[in-house]
Amino acid sequence: MKNKNILWLYLFLIIGVLDLFFTAQGDSDLRIYSKPLIILSLFMYFFQISKVIEGTILRKSMLSALFFSWLGDILLLFPNLFLYGLGAFLMAHICLIIGFKISQNKPFEIGKVNFIKLFLYNLPIYISAAFVYYLIQPNLHEMKIPVIIYVLVIVMMVTTARERYHKTIPESFWQVFIGGLFFMISDGILALNLFFKPFPESGVLVMGTYIVAQLLIVMGIRSHYLSVKA
Image 1 (cartoon, rainbow, N blue to C red):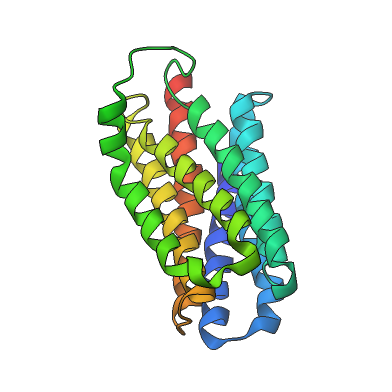
Image 2 (tube, helix red, strand yellow):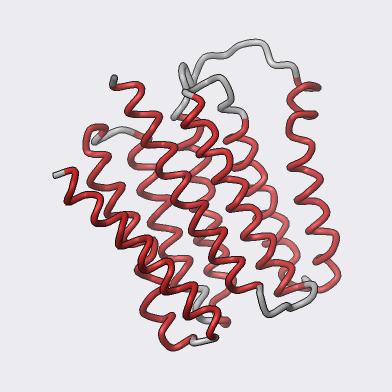
């Protein structure tokens, strides 16, 4: 069964590489077939390997995050559906926030919080998001409010990933945190290309960081629940 499950992971990687190739070649027609299959194959991989936590909020939140990511990928293939794609990824990030919060040791335990230290730890994330927003905001126009909401949610997603430090095993923390960072970088590159200054390498950079992000997050969550079950 394990060998069968990993076939989905291989499929994810193969399709991801193909989509990067099509993106580099500017072949939008073939990407209509390749792009939707990237997250679909990762969804199937996680669906199969996470049956040991069937019925849990963690599994439901992660499968929902992958579903909304898949939907967002499809919607973003069509420029006139950009706002709907943004909404789908907004939902994906909300699901990831829930998943990251649940995948901690004693997630609902209320302890002392040093807000100054917390702010300083998260400051590089805040500054990065604020800098990208500063560059793109003159060209947002009617997209300003949706983008502000999206930026706030993705920052929350990354900071939630960072706050798992010492609350799960190191392997899970670093995979999820780096995955969250790559997700923010991918969205940042996309935003800069759309609303600041277009550049030809953006498509490959967006998809490359996005594919790595999704893989790291899935593997990091897997590492967490396996360590809890052990």
